[in-house]
Amino acid sequence: MSNRGTVMSVRNLSKSYHTKDQHVTALSKVTFHLTKGEMLAVMGTSGSGKSTLLNILGTLDEPTSGDILLQGVKLEKMFIEPHATKFRRENIGFIFQSFQLLKDLSVEENIALPLVLKGLPNKEIRDKVNRMLELVGLMHHRTHRPVELSGGQQQRVAISRALITSPPIVLADEPTGNLDYNTSREILKVITDMKQAFDQSIVIVTHDPMVATYADRVIFFHDGNIVDEYVCKCQQDEDMDQILIKFRQLLER
Ligand SMILES: Nc1ncnc2c1ncn2[C@@H]1O[C@H](COP(=O)(O)OP(=O)(O)O)[C@@H](O)[C@H]1O
Ligand SMILES: [Mg+2]
Image 1 (cartoon, rainbow, N blue to C red):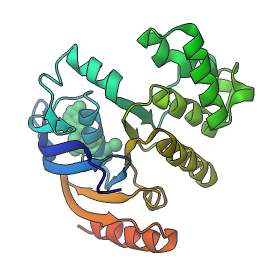
Image 2 (cartoon, rainbow, N blue to C red):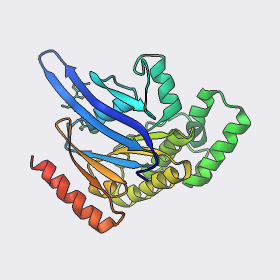
Image 3 (cartoon, protein in one colour):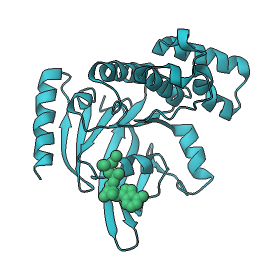
């Protein structure tokens, strides 16, 4: 897996926020690589910069300094419109804790939305949406509205919508944060199955060690810095123990 090439490189990424009387350094010279097909978990205490990082990787926010390279290439004006939107549409799928479905649209309409925005022919949209409904087990709910679904089903719709365009990079911010333990495991299974099916790279932010055991690698954030790393051994119990130890060490800092 680690020999398969770098999809995204993050170099010396920093982000500061200036408010009326405060100066916050959310990210401080963060450097890491994301490999093709890799699932990278980002763990850290609250306020350590995880969401800021994800927002910048997805061009929803602009760094103060530093570079992001895609397959070794630095994209010019990546954070300036219309380049930011173009980059996002072509490369990134977002999954949020709060699902963020459009409540007046049905399941299939929500999933189809990115393809409609891309202007794909109707037949192609129908085929892709059907395949996705099969994959995530929502065929029988296709005409339902989000309010008629459980939390886990809503997250399946959100995942389907994020992945329907087969983006090479998926950014997930606490995707199981609103779900119970068993539903979280189901959703993680969906995410890892889809990753396999579409050969995607995923950055998943979580404060839950169980979630991190699904990743290939975990980086630990504290005060806007990467302070530790763990490469998973694909042995759930051992990985869980090691991740827990490292996460506890973070909390004690
Ligand atoms: N828009 C903003 N304006 C000012 N400060 C912000 C903003 N967004 C985040 N921060 C600050 O940056 C730091 C990192 O926040 P965040 O990335 O949301 O952390 P996490 O997701 O790890 O909880 C925090 O101190 C937070 O208060
Ligand atoms: Mg956050």
